[in-house]
Amino acid sequence: MANETTIPLLPCRSLDDVAPFYQALGFEITYRQERPNPYLTLRREDLHLHFFGMPQFDPADSYGSCLVVVDDLVDIHRAFTDGLRATYGKVLVSGVPRMTRPRPRRNQEGHFGFSIVDPGGNWIRFVGRSDTAETDDRGGLARTLQNAVVQADSRGNPQQAARILDGGLARPDAADDPAVQVEALVYRAELALQLDEPESARELVRQARSIPLDDGSRDALADTLRHAEDLITALPPA
Image 1 (cartoon, helix red, strand yellow):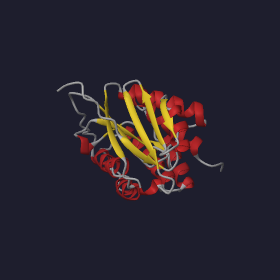
Image 2: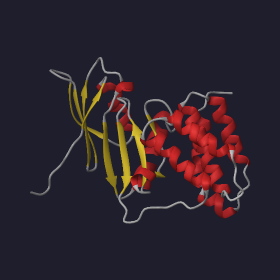
Image 3: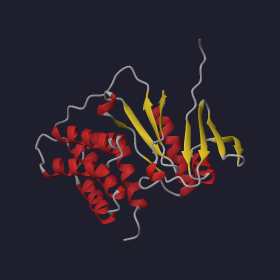
Protein backbone atom coordinates (compact mmCIF):
# COMPACT_ATOMS: atom_id res chain seq x y z
CA MET A 1 0.00 0.00 0.00
CA ALA A 2 1.08 3.58 -0.61
CA ASN A 3 -0.21 7.16 -0.65
CA GLU A 4 -2.14 6.72 2.60
CA THR A 5 -3.44 9.88 4.29
CA THR A 6 -4.21 10.27 7.98
CA ILE A 7 -6.36 13.21 9.06
CA PRO A 8 -6.91 13.97 12.78
CA LEU A 9 -10.47 14.50 14.01
CA LEU A 10 -10.43 16.90 16.95
CA PRO A 11 -13.14 18.12 19.35
CA CYS A 12 -14.25 21.69 19.92
CA ARG A 13 -17.08 23.42 21.72
CA SER A 14 -18.11 25.44 18.68
CA LEU A 15 -17.07 25.57 15.05
CA ASP A 16 -17.27 29.35 15.34
CA ASP A 17 -14.42 29.18 17.87
CA VAL A 18 -11.94 27.23 15.76
CA ALA A 19 -12.75 28.40 12.22
CA PRO A 20 -11.60 32.08 12.55
CA PHE A 21 -8.50 31.07 14.49
CA TYR A 22 -7.30 28.63 11.85
CA GLN A 23 -8.21 31.04 9.06
CA ALA A 24 -5.85 33.52 10.74
CA LEU A 25 -3.14 30.85 10.40
CA GLY A 26 -3.76 30.54 6.67
CA PHE A 27 -6.14 27.58 6.62
CA GLU A 28 -9.15 27.52 4.31
CA ILE A 29 -12.51 25.97 5.10
CA THR A 30 -13.14 23.12 2.68
CA TYR A 31 -16.40 21.87 4.22
CA ARG A 32 -18.76 22.83 7.03
CA GLN A 33 -22.06 21.50 8.30
CA GLU A 34 -24.17 22.24 11.38
CA ARG A 35 -26.66 19.35 11.16
CA PRO A 36 -27.08 16.59 11.99
CA ASN A 37 -23.72 17.05 13.72
CA PRO A 38 -21.38 20.09 13.64
CA TYR A 39 -18.39 19.26 11.46
CA LEU A 40 -15.62 21.37 9.92
CA THR A 41 -12.76 20.53 7.58
CA LEU A 42 -9.74 22.81 7.15
CA ARG A 43 -6.73 22.72 4.85
CA ARG A 44 -3.45 24.57 4.58
CA GLU A 45 -1.50 23.20 1.63
CA ASP A 46 -1.06 19.48 2.49
CA LEU A 47 -2.09 19.86 6.13
CA HIS A 48 -5.66 18.80 6.85
CA LEU A 49 -7.49 19.14 10.17
CA HIS A 50 -11.09 18.11 10.88
CA PHE A 51 -13.21 19.21 13.86
CA PHE A 52 -16.44 17.98 15.37
CA GLY A 53 -18.53 20.19 17.64
CA MET A 54 -19.56 19.23 21.17
CA PRO A 55 -21.57 22.11 22.74
CA GLN A 56 -20.89 20.97 26.34
CA PHE A 57 -17.19 20.39 25.72
CA ASP A 58 -14.69 22.21 27.96
CA PRO A 59 -11.40 23.01 26.16
CA ALA A 60 -9.61 22.77 29.52
CA ASP A 61 -10.46 19.05 29.56
CA SER A 62 -9.21 18.37 26.04
CA TYR A 63 -6.73 15.59 25.34
CA GLY A 64 -6.87 16.23 21.59
CA SER A 65 -3.45 16.34 19.98
CA CYS A 66 -1.61 15.56 16.78
CA LEU A 67 1.95 15.71 15.49
CA VAL A 68 2.88 17.57 12.29
CA VAL A 69 6.36 16.95 10.87
CA VAL A 70 7.48 19.70 8.48
CA ASP A 71 10.54 20.60 6.44
CA ASP A 72 10.24 24.36 7.02
CA LEU A 73 9.57 24.76 10.74
CA VAL A 74 10.85 28.35 10.96
CA ASP A 75 8.97 29.45 7.84
CA ILE A 76 5.63 28.00 8.92
CA HIS A 77 5.99 29.48 12.41
CA ARG A 78 6.77 32.87 10.88
CA ALA A 79 3.70 32.62 8.64
CA PHE A 80 1.52 31.74 11.65
CA THR A 81 3.02 34.64 13.60
CA ASP A 82 2.26 37.08 10.78
CA GLY A 83 -1.30 35.76 10.55
CA LEU A 84 -1.92 36.16 14.28
CA ARG A 85 -0.57 39.71 14.25
CA ALA A 86 -2.73 40.61 11.26
CA THR A 87 -5.90 39.16 12.82
CA TYR A 88 -5.47 39.80 16.55
CA GLY A 89 -2.94 42.61 16.57
CA LYS A 90 -0.47 40.46 18.51
CA VAL A 91 0.94 36.96 18.85
CA LEU A 92 -1.15 34.91 21.27
CA VAL A 93 1.33 33.69 23.88
CA SER A 94 -0.91 32.82 26.84
CA GLY A 95 -4.33 31.41 27.52
CA VAL A 96 -6.36 29.47 24.99
CA PRO A 97 -5.67 29.78 22.11
CA ARG A 98 -1.91 30.37 22.06
CA MET A 99 1.28 29.47 20.21
CA THR A 100 4.75 28.68 21.52
CA ARG A 101 8.08 29.42 19.82
CA PRO A 102 10.33 26.91 18.04
CA ARG A 103 12.71 25.49 20.61
CA PRO A 104 14.87 22.34 20.82
CA ARG A 105 13.05 19.60 22.73
CA ARG A 106 15.03 17.25 24.93
CA ASN A 107 12.16 14.76 24.85
CA GLN A 108 12.30 14.80 21.03
CA GLU A 109 16.03 14.10 20.79
CA GLY A 110 16.91 17.78 20.44
CA HIS A 111 14.80 18.43 17.36
CA PHE A 112 13.14 21.84 17.19
CA GLY A 113 9.40 22.12 17.67
CA PHE A 114 6.57 24.44 18.62
CA SER A 115 2.95 23.94 19.61
CA ILE A 116 -0.38 25.55 18.87
CA VAL A 117 -3.08 25.22 21.51
CA ASP A 118 -6.26 25.95 19.58
CA PRO A 119 -9.63 27.27 20.88
CA GLY A 120 -10.75 23.68 21.44
CA GLY A 121 -7.77 23.03 23.74
CA ASN A 122 -6.17 20.74 21.15
CA TRP A 123 -2.37 20.65 20.93
CA ILE A 124 -1.09 20.76 17.35
CA ARG A 125 2.59 19.92 17.73
CA PHE A 126 4.94 20.92 14.92
CA VAL A 127 8.36 19.26 14.67
CA GLY A 128 11.09 19.97 12.15
CA ARG A 129 12.18 17.10 9.95
CA SER A 130 15.95 17.03 10.30
CA ASP A 131 18.73 14.51 10.04
CA THR A 132 20.65 16.09 12.89
CA ALA A 133 19.43 17.14 16.30
CA GLU A 134 20.79 20.06 18.28
CA THR A 135 22.71 19.63 21.50
CA ASP A 136 23.18 22.57 23.83
CA ASP A 137 26.43 22.51 25.82
CA ARG A 138 26.30 26.10 27.09
CA GLY A 139 26.20 25.19 30.77
CA GLY A 140 23.81 24.36 33.57
CA LEU A 141 21.24 27.08 32.87
CA ALA A 142 20.89 25.84 29.27
CA ARG A 143 20.05 22.34 30.55
CA THR A 144 17.62 23.82 33.08
CA LEU A 145 15.93 25.76 30.29
CA GLN A 146 15.58 22.59 28.23
CA ASN A 147 13.95 20.80 31.17
CA ALA A 148 11.51 23.68 31.65
CA VAL A 149 10.57 23.59 27.95
CA VAL A 150 9.67 19.91 28.25
CA GLN A 151 7.37 20.62 31.19
CA ALA A 152 5.52 23.61 29.70
CA ASP A 153 5.70 23.32 25.92
CA SER A 154 5.36 19.53 25.73
CA ARG A 155 3.46 18.55 28.87
CA GLY A 156 1.40 21.67 29.44
CA ASN A 157 2.61 22.23 32.99
CA PRO A 158 3.81 25.86 33.22
CA GLN A 159 3.80 25.78 37.04
CA GLN A 160 6.45 23.05 37.14
CA ALA A 161 8.40 24.71 34.34
CA ALA A 162 8.45 27.98 36.30
CA ARG A 163 9.69 26.21 39.42
CA ILE A 164 12.50 24.53 37.48
CA LEU A 165 13.56 27.75 35.79
CA ASP A 166 13.36 29.81 38.99
CA GLY A 167 15.78 27.38 40.59
CA GLY A 168 18.27 27.78 37.76
CA LEU A 169 17.98 31.56 37.63
CA ALA A 170 18.44 31.81 41.41
CA ARG A 171 21.80 30.03 41.16
CA PRO A 172 23.77 31.95 38.53
CA ASP A 173 26.94 30.31 37.24
CA ALA A 174 29.86 32.30 35.88
CA ALA A 175 30.03 29.78 33.04
CA ASP A 176 26.50 30.53 31.86
CA ASP A 177 26.38 32.21 28.47
CA PRO A 178 24.69 35.66 28.67
CA ALA A 179 22.63 34.66 25.62
CA VAL A 180 21.23 31.71 27.57
CA GLN A 181 20.37 34.03 30.46
CA VAL A 182 18.36 36.18 28.06
CA GLU A 183 16.60 33.12 26.60
CA ALA A 184 15.80 31.83 30.09
CA LEU A 185 14.45 35.16 31.32
CA VAL A 186 12.28 35.68 28.25
CA TYR A 187 10.92 32.15 28.53
CA ARG A 188 10.23 32.67 32.22
CA ALA A 189 8.34 35.85 31.28
CA GLU A 190 6.24 33.81 28.84
CA LEU A 191 5.48 31.36 31.64
CA ALA A 192 4.52 34.25 33.91
CA LEU A 193 1.95 35.37 31.35
CA GLN A 194 0.54 31.85 31.17
CA LEU A 195 0.29 31.86 34.96
CA ASP A 196 -1.50 35.24 34.95
CA GLU A 197 1.43 37.08 36.57
CA PRO A 198 1.72 40.15 34.32
CA GLU A 199 3.92 42.23 36.61
CA SER A 200 6.39 39.37 36.97
CA ALA A 201 6.45 39.05 33.18
CA ARG A 202 7.17 42.76 32.82
CA GLU A 203 10.04 42.60 35.31
CA LEU A 204 11.55 39.49 33.70
CA VAL A 205 11.57 41.15 30.29
CA ARG A 206 13.23 44.21 31.88
CA GLN A 207 15.93 41.94 33.33
CA ALA A 208 16.46 40.26 29.97
CA ARG A 209 16.87 43.63 28.27
CA SER A 210 19.45 44.71 30.84
CA ILE A 211 21.92 41.88 30.14
CA PRO A 212 24.90 43.15 28.09
CA LEU A 213 25.27 41.39 24.73
CA ASP A 214 27.86 41.64 22.00
CA ASP A 215 26.73 42.17 18.42
CA GLY A 216 27.02 38.48 17.55
CA SER A 217 24.85 37.39 20.47
CA ARG A 218 22.30 40.11 19.77
CA ASP A 219 22.00 38.97 16.16
CA ALA A 220 21.66 35.34 17.23
CA LEU A 221 18.94 36.32 19.72
CA ALA A 222 16.93 38.39 17.25
CA ASP A 223 13.92 36.07 17.40
CA THR A 224 14.09 35.86 21.21
CA LEU A 225 14.26 39.64 21.55
CA ARG A 226 11.37 40.03 19.12
CA HIS A 227 9.42 37.54 21.21
CA ALA A 228 10.14 39.64 24.31
CA GLU A 229 8.46 42.55 22.55
CA ASP A 230 5.49 40.31 21.74
CA LEU A 231 5.22 39.53 25.46
CA ILE A 232 5.17 43.22 26.33
CA THR A 233 2.44 43.77 23.73
CA ALA A 234 0.39 40.99 25.30
CA LEU A 235 0.59 42.57 28.77
CA PRO A 236 -2.25 44.70 30.12
CA PRO A 237 -1.42 48.43 30.46
CA ALA A 238 0.78 49.15 33.47
